[in-house]
Image (cartoon, rainbow, N blue to C red):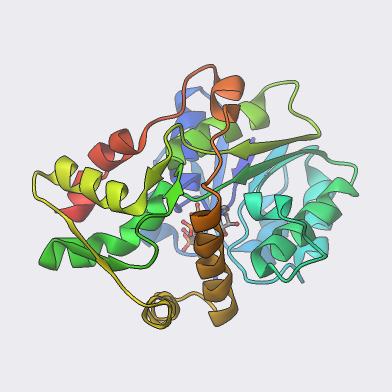
Length: 278
Ligand SMILES: NC(=O)c1ccc[n+]([C@@H]2O[C@H](COP(=O)([O-])OP(=O)(O)OC[C@H]3O[C@@H](n4cnc5c(N)ncnc54)[C@H](OP(=O)(O)O)[C@@H]3O)[C@@H](O)[C@H]2O)c1
């Protein structure tokens, strides 16, 4: 039995589907089973990380997604997991690679604070360290639907956004296969595209042009906070974009190395999500 936390989320949902498709028993954790719309084949359990203990009996491996802005609760959650399971796969972040502990990258510090108790727990662990998710561009969906524009900052910044299904595919391998214990995978998509190009590709996927409108840092910050990000996270995200302007994002082959299949392109992602932008 594999426990998938964040099961209704971007990565958790396709992971549940993949595991069920492969005949692996899945327990899916969500705060609201009625709203989550998870597949009938999963053992859907109501709860969150604060109540994870109740979802752990009989579980061998856990996919851990951390939606909170601090790692304060991580030692208790990891202790509960280690009391039941033998393996954990953490959805961490490439921000951990960025000189964490010595700088003020709050996202890096958060994920390092999750990785540390896991590494010390005696569990078999695998850390997934993705760069930006393609799903981040869903933040543009409302404006694209309403006006056919994207108002954002650093249009010329390039990144290799990753398809959530590729993160899920790597997670499925790490949860069920051998040879992933102690590995930390730096995950990206296959293609380095500027944000202006990403917006254009979304337009091609929906059959309507999408125009880019460059905005100020202050406006971008206001929008991220309005979207629910803590202000210091919004700062780090904007700093990250500013840094990418100096040195483009990375492209790794980790998805293909782990799954045997090349990472999906952003064009593929846009086609898969065209309905979200129409
Ligand atoms: N976005 C990126 O570019 C990026 C890059 C690197 C790493 N990451 C990592 O990926 C994680 C996000 O993964 P994701 O996109 O799959 O997650 P997600 O879709 O944002 O959220 C996963 C699930 O967590 C639950 N949840 C949300 N907020 C919660 C809260 N405050 N308390 C308890 N549960 C909550 C929700 O499930 P229910 O409502 O069903 O309970 C949600 O469906 C980040 O937290 C970060 O660690 C993200």
